[in-house]
Image 1 (spheres, rainbow, N blue to C red):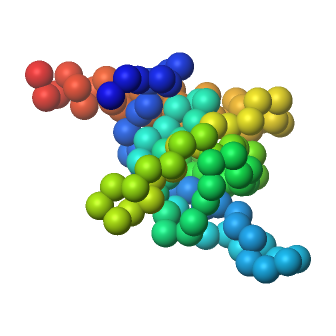
Image 2: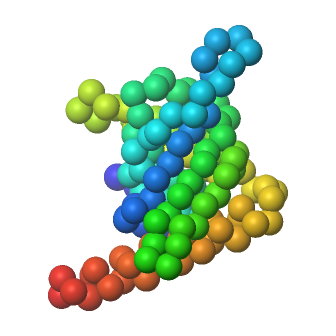
Length: 126
């Protein structure tokens, strides 16, 4: 498969995510999703909730670390890719640029922690 990502996707470690989905005309609900991979520009998720390419969603992220949690509340993203694997839907989301500065800073911090973790894990396996 031809890799189109601008940055390498990293393993999820202890990254938790929720997306806000519509539940009727005027109501929304936050629901947990499984994280497949992550980088500062986007995230791969798995959910049973149907999403369409081009849809825009809000996400809330939390990375649990030994020294405290890093959270990103209400970051906007667009659905860029959908794929069915073994009767499960995988979605590729791209974070929208121009968001709040602290959200962008925390996305960068999460990517940095995951990159260091991936490097250590790779060295251990060698």
